[in-house]
Image (cartoon, rainbow, N blue to C red; front, side, top):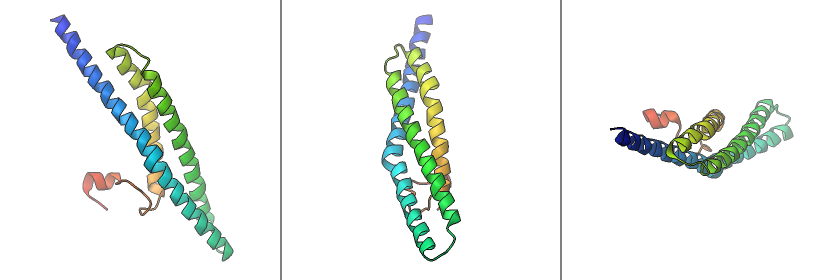
Length: 144
């Protein structure tokens, strides 16, 4: 019957919206509390290495490039995290299960994917001893 089908669709859309909301909140927390601080800590260590190398008249060009790129990526992560927070707060103003699900898809998922790409790039650049979460290889294959 049509009423039952509509009710089931609403339940599915509400479940989808709750899942995206949880993923968005997790992405914000991980970025703010774990990823960006770890990248900043590693960048600070790189800057100390650069100073030491320069004091010894050793070329630090590679470390300078990495530090610059990480600072740039951390800035992007910060901007995307703020954009994600804003978009998630805007979704709360939408009404109806279908409207909310569409808002999450349109306003939240794209920003989350951009943030993931930035974090993935930072993961490849940050020393393992500074990276605070398991890598994809560790999660999927138990590789360390």
